[in-house]
Image (cartoon, rainbow, N blue to C red; front, side):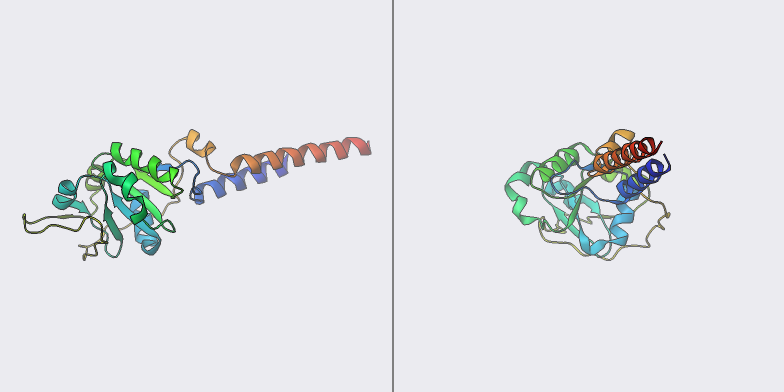
Length: 197
């Protein structure tokens, strides 16, 4: 029984720290988790805005040094080759609906993708930086990475990201395999004990 508890707790710890594998179910993350990922792993992440170019030009999420891209969700399927599949993609829109659709499209093409819940609206409510256009002459490129200096950054609380619900925890790749292995080991141990008696 102790073995089962140890393996189960290890599986949960592994599941909470492991990003989804390409082609596997993807996850929704909070703006706090997205911010932490972007601050800690800028070189390994693309922040993809799937709103229209007009929306993006007016205001976008600003993380100093992060690779920022804008591909409207309606164009994503035809422009998928513009994305680097060796990087994790955090997708956002205004409130989370279009980015959820984009996350699923990316998963179908074997990208590791996270949907930022609440979109740029939740990002601003959490008081994280955005960049606002100052006029019509300031139009940002829609494809190229944008690197702009950020204002004072908001401190990140140190916490381990956890799945948003129990159902998401069940979808973590490999969890079922570890649990099955623990159950088989427990049964084998019990059979050995019974044979000795």
